[in-house]
Length: 78
Image 1 (cartoon, rainbow, N blue to C red):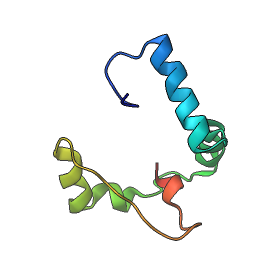
Image 2 (image 1 turned 90 degrees about the horizontal axis):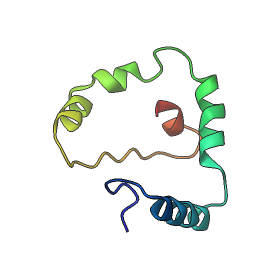
Image 3 (image 1 turned 90 degrees about the vertical axis):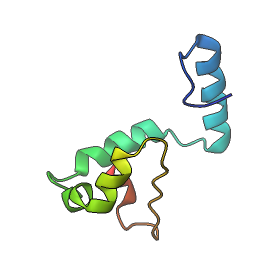
């Protein structure tokens, strides 16, 4: 099963929820909403305008991996 596969059905959504809960019981969506509310306007704009990011965005099926120690703001960029 692909988590981002074509045409979600009720069964695939249920299976996706089980997998995500198995990976982490934390409700990421609620946590992400809380973090998004604290985000300031234009946060990460430098990143979105960087040539490397723009090249990644223009190329289909490329992986973007943002790494860093906890607390540096990776989640806030999303």
